[in-house]
Length: 316
Image (cartoon, rainbow, N blue to C red):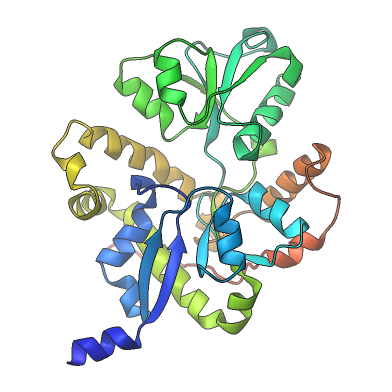
């Protein structure tokens, strides 16, 4: 009876991950399994809606919080969608140009067939920035829309390169015995990675609940960083039992290990987990203005709330 009353008293929150169940969501799974959300009086449900609908669902209050790509967030708030960015998960974006051959200069890429999920979003923006680093234009490459078939396309030799996540597709390709090279944004061009958003209304009406949710989530991040092996075993056992019984076990572990560095930076070492260097937001904003994706306005700054910081605890 007491347990029932306790469960009924929990605040129910749905979190939109923005993708299918994946080892990259391990911090949330760790926090669920270790009872960190319950410690904060929260019952968490994960939602796996994919695509731009996540922004709408969160803005309308159908879902309380969700993952957001930084460029999608800036684009949304500039269009008047009432969202607030409350924390940064990845310190920078893992998007990369993935090729079989090394790309060191413009001639290495000029005229090559490059596959992308579509001419939109972070991958498209990153490709344009990478081309700019090499003094190239979109017209200098043979750009193809391939959906989410990066691995299959590269295995079949249909593309010379694809845009993907440095912590995912290269691991899968290497597991197939393929040579892989990656090209990412230079340090001066870095922008924030995946973050956490909520609606303006939910944030204004439930500021402490948002803080409690973030505290529980980043306890999961902290645990994962300190003891990834134990956390991996916990997550696989509960959420991916099919992986445990297959040869994908080591592949998924490599994906997780490649993901961990994205949670940290020099900034988090000094300030704590949960936010990134403000300059990275400025870098992204300037690039999007330059590419005429958003107007040159400072309105977005009031939509990025930087109150939350998670101070890590010493390892036991």
